Image (cartoon, rainbow, N blue to C red; front, top):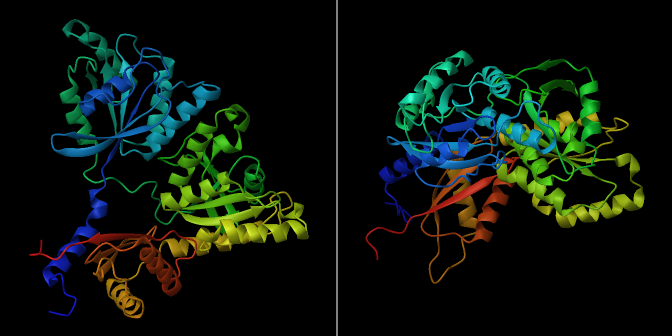
Length: 463
């Protein structure tokens, strides 16, 4: 046994296996969609076995995608409750429908709820068209079948062309067991990789607070040899994403439609604007956060940057409206960056003018650099050699007479690089940040968040 062998070799192997299997433990996702007031939230509560989702007779109470952990017959999955779908919705109602589309895109399967007492409506058929384009497995629930006499009404739902309608009563629980059995058959054992397009153009979201020039930048990019408009499976289907060439590279621009085209409708509903931004961030591989260089940095800018980091996406910062900055403003901006953006020094920056096109082509190099950092993987041997050097040169300070030590480390995943450190005790947060800084110094990770998790195991046999 070596001097710091608090763990046995077998235990190290167990820990590696534990970390390697973590991604397989991700739960599959079920989106519950349908037009307003068909009983989606009541059904969600029935699936959960507890009252979680808000239920009210007034249509449109559920406005956001709300996620809950669920379990049926020993299988765990995530249920996403969505707001009601109205195909020709305007304003706020449109944003609710858009959230339902995002939920479909993020799900592994969809539970489509219809009202058997009302029958098939135009809104139901509009949802069906979106579901078909999404190519996701769909389970059809004909709700409000409260007794045998009304079962015949559910059979008309065969006309939707989605297969067997499962006759249920969400409020009484009738038929929900058979429905959930069908849901488990539709859900994969392990979730599919979200928005994966192996070998396809990289997915780029352009996000930022209002009026920083996102629209101008998107128009400038899409105007440069716009290639095609496509109906990608698993994305927001209307409007669609765009393939654009930037600096000789082809990218799929994640269509932040609510930000780009419907900002007037969204005014006064900043909450939903933030939801659309979050949806774009989740679907992207790399986010270009646009900041107005001609104005002082704001809390909202910092919140969006932190959101990208927390979501684990690659990051490029674009300082737009450079043509409107004079020498004095640039001097102040340098100070603001030094003071406020110190936590994001790892992100490449580009000074651009979306209006004139200045340096827009240089975004491509920054995006590629950020993606390379985001995908970096370090072998376990190389990582532990690095950790040994760091611990020898800068051991953890004593805590209560004890000195926690890093016993073993492994990279659990990339995209973003995530490291798990097995230690003899809890590490100080300052020391965790020190390890993260050293990881960046030695291995780069330019443009990517780096997540470090600590698993402290006390010595066995000691009380």
